[in-house]
Image 1 (cartoon, rainbow, N blue to C red):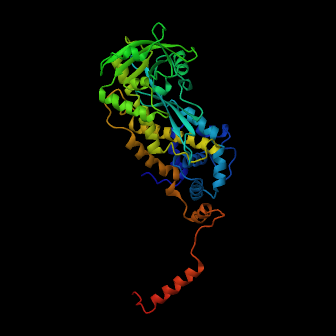
Image 2: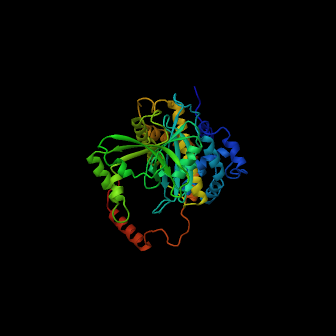
Length: 435
């Protein structure tokens, strides 16, 4: 019979199998763990990281949990240790990606879907940080995850691509400079076209009026045009094809209404309203390689990265930044949260296999509920609640206590307490005593 575990560190080590093998050594290499004080080992420091970044515990609660497990530590000391963990956590995150070697499809292509998502600091009204994500569309594994500030926009230049990669991206990435950079790496493109962010030409490079070329096309039909895309300055030429699908009247009216609502100043132009009635997808893959119908179907699968981001946000609260924007703690929290998410996904694939959710066959389930259950499974391993020491509660209360503040916490006036107890005693006079 297996004996029950009596050491919280032994239970916590179960998580290490889903992290890089050199995690503990890297803590010393990147100066996150220099010498043992309150935190005795790199594993204990990693527990602090996951308490703060993974489980979103406030600093004082992290200190209280650590005190219940090991010895008394203050929230200021926890914050100091966390600030030193930035380079270590970033290095671990890089080692986690890509999570597994993935072979190309039988045709020699690998579909890489790319997107970005915004993150706000507490109390912020706009974007403070941005996540840039690349995901394998077949296995739904993350290939790259980058964190930037708000001033770094969406562009394909952020990502490392290779010959045989086919990039799928929305219209925010329809910029000649980024698309040209991806093509220079040998990648092919399937990008929702924004005709107002590029200069359009026909296959020979002559100016192309898209509204003129498409105005006679019937609704619910698909047409292919050979095009050349240029940046406004004339540089970074990208050649390919635009597959244009004309929406039916009901779909077009909804799209145009959305265009009007999203227009910040005045009313949209006639050309903008005309283009809103179309789905325009640009690709560098010739129709002889992948047909227009296949390209459009592939682009619709791009929604999988949106679902992955929504899952991160709803299940793991990736967008709920706990620290001040652009601070060392914010940097640690962002990268630590992503590390926690990838560790959770590795654990899921190790336990359940990685074929049940692939897109090359009908899937039996999605990951939302599985992620929620695994999150609950992992939480006790991180908190070590089963091993909290009974005699540590007095120290925990000191750690969790409120600091002196200008505005004191409320309490009843002494006069009210005296009146209350006098009334209470008088009401009890003459009452029978319970047996």
